Picture 1 (cartoon, helix red, strand yellow):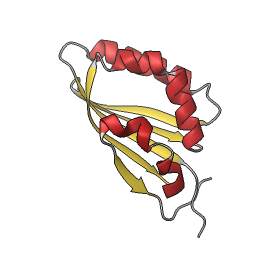
Picture 2 (spheres, helix red, strand yellow):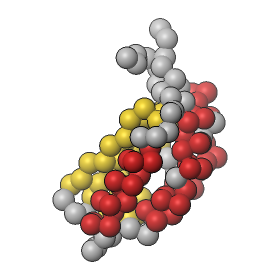
Picture 3 (cartoon, rainbow, N blue to C red):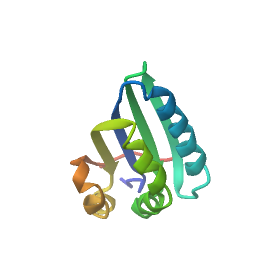
Picture 4 (cartoon, rainbow, N blue to C red):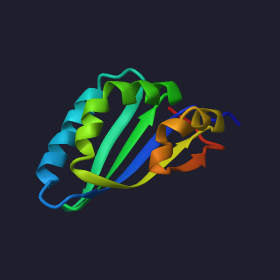
Length: 120
């Protein structure tokens, strides 16, 4: 079976006290930036009140993730002042995950190898 080359990043956040409004504005800025990146297929933030959030990002491949991290580095740095990253998951084909190991090593991500699926 063909495995789609899509790479999905899922980030789990604990929003620091009093920072929910700023973090939501930061999320809007990230979504606006991502919507202009050709290899960025989808992006969404979900919230559990004002203290927890989850981001989900789908990319065409690992190269699109690497490009995104370069383009959005300034917003990522701001994000780190508003939240604590509690977990990171990266889903994708094994060869795509291998290209991202070094980039995310400081976040101790859980890597999930996509073995079957499809993409419309």
